[in-house]
Length: 366
View 1 (cartoon, rainbow, N blue to C red):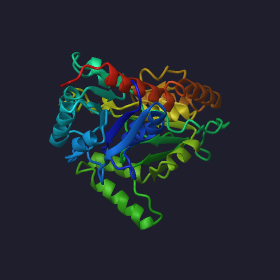
View 2 (tube, rainbow, N blue to C red; view 1 turned 60 degrees about the horizontal axis):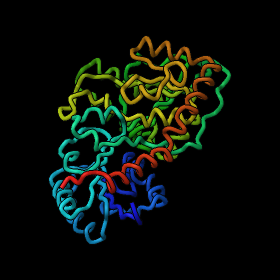
View 3 (cartoon, rainbow, N blue to C red; view 1 turned 60 degrees about the vertical axis):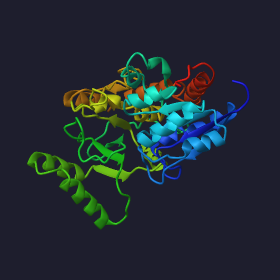
View 4 (tube, rainbow, N blue to C red; view 1 turned 180 degrees about the vertical axis):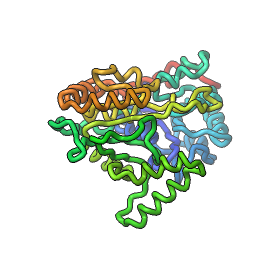
């Protein structure tokens, strides 16, 4: 690849309030791309997150600005397909970045697809896999390291602190029967942040109301939102790390439901990325997690994290981590095992190699 290459991005969310996928796959990569010889620019961003936006005119602008590569981050639909076709006709290479589904029309229409896990790549037909590259979500705050393991085993009077980070708004605790009597739990998720007691009560009432009419489910949700040792806080780019720093143990319980995505043919839980796992491990926390495909290459069970499949295994794993020595050992191993392979530097290298391949070596889709 001779000279600098103009690279235009089409985003699925605005830079002012980016989705996690926009932040990790694009915005965090821009300094690396600049240093590697790419002149990257944001050609399109929606006012609010939109995976099926109207991007009419994107191809015309990229042609006018002499872009060599057009990168479509997570977006799809009729408008996107027309612009991809126009770009291909003009000889501009196209890249599709996707993190949570199989979208064969976009994969076949573009010159290169970037996915976040090997498992998601393997879900694609064999005839397109040679044009798919894996770039993981890079660890965003490698400087954050949790406190040294507290020297107690947790009691009702002096509980150990569990932390769970989610992109959703949990209304119950998956898999576990409940939190142990010797622990307290902070859930960081899609909750409203308000100091007013009345606002919090309204939010809790809305969560219980959305549980439906089933008495057992409503009772489970009500127990969760009213639990005196469960704290639910709004996700914030800095606040999430404050929660990690204050924790003794991180948990990732995932309900392995059998509901599937028709386009993928597998349950939705199987395509989750490893980013929340590596974030917690990088902070030096001992983690207990449900084993899902993206976690399997990261975790050496019992050494740098613990796997638990059902309520009994969860209870045993958490009880094991009451030991301060085990929390320290597993947390230290966790941080050491993920910092290098899942760093932003390592993922930027993967991305740059993929972009150079699509520019110099990939057969044109046109």
